[in-house]
Image (cartoon, rainbow, N blue to C red; front, side, top):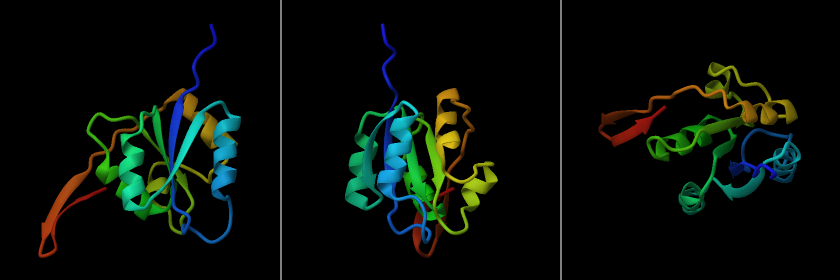
Length: 132
């Protein structure tokens, strides 16, 4: 019996970085290494829908802002987040040792090397926010 392909929900920030991989390029790479993919924008209504979608991995293609936004809205004990750094600084990806997006990085999701992250809450005059 053939093994069922893992489902990836891709949340893509079309405004991240300057030039590079387009949404269709990223989707093509994810499918080429054996995953099925459903793609969403990082806009609020799309993000809520994306996080309700059944998935084995949530992939975030964007910069620190997109990664933080998705991570802050993830359910505790939810599926893993995979970072595809497309922003300019990509400090979150760098701190996790994640390089530029490519087939090798995406294929590494099959090994499921996971690192825990601990979102915290900060309160101030602006209210209370979860931060990464």
